[in-house]
Amino acid sequence: MSDTLSRVSTTCFGLSYLLAFLIELARARWPLPSLRTVGLILGGAGLFAHTVFLVVRQPTPAAAYGGTLALAWVLAVFYLYGAVHHRRQAWAVFVLPLVLGLVGLAVFAVSTDYALAFDHTRVWGAVHGVLVLLAAVGVSVGCVASVMYLIQARRLRLKRDPLGGLTMLSLERLEAMNRRAVNAAFPLLTLGLLLGSVLLRQYHGAAENWLSLKVLGTVGLWAVFAVLLYLRYAAHVPGRRLAWLTIAAFGVMLVTLVAAHPFAGGSPEASP
Image (cartoon, rainbow, N blue to C red; front, top):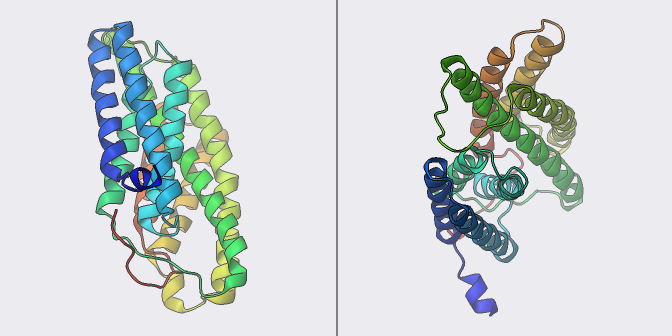
């Protein structure tokens, strides 16, 4: 049994997610209960295989490979919960492409086995990683809500439904989802950035580390979030512009996620 589980690869859950996405696209045109059931089964199978892979292989989240897979796993849970809870909404059609993109990004990422230079920084390094990962989840959820918001706004403006038989959440609910995601992600990102700065200054304070793409990207993402919050609560910018800015923040987050980590050092990790 353990030997069988150890053979689970990214192909297993990636293919399951892809088939579930194709089923959801078909359900957008033909809203049959049987298609929904098949889609949920495929999505659940993908999440199970994804979970087994992470438990058995234990890829380090400090590397682009492990970080993207960990974020994809959280979003896969988010997708499956939403697909069950929002059964009539086009939920999986928007979340699954994000999961598939992250899995694909992990496959093509340079896998590196990261090890912290100081053992007693591992706990705080793990806390830093969890904070940044949760912030990334918030950015991703905000991105999904923003894409849905833009499409729903266009659908209402043109008075037609591009998604066939599936409905979408209202603009008010999508804007609220975006707002809650950003409001939750910003303090998490701030704490993660501050803790990472302390660790970087104390143990890895070389100038090239401070100027690494990972550090600069995280600072840039924090700045984008600060501007986003200012525009929302001080300038009262319309929701459409905020949606585009949230999508831009997601792009910055992706670049930061795949960048090399300044805490790292080590040898190549075994490929999946």
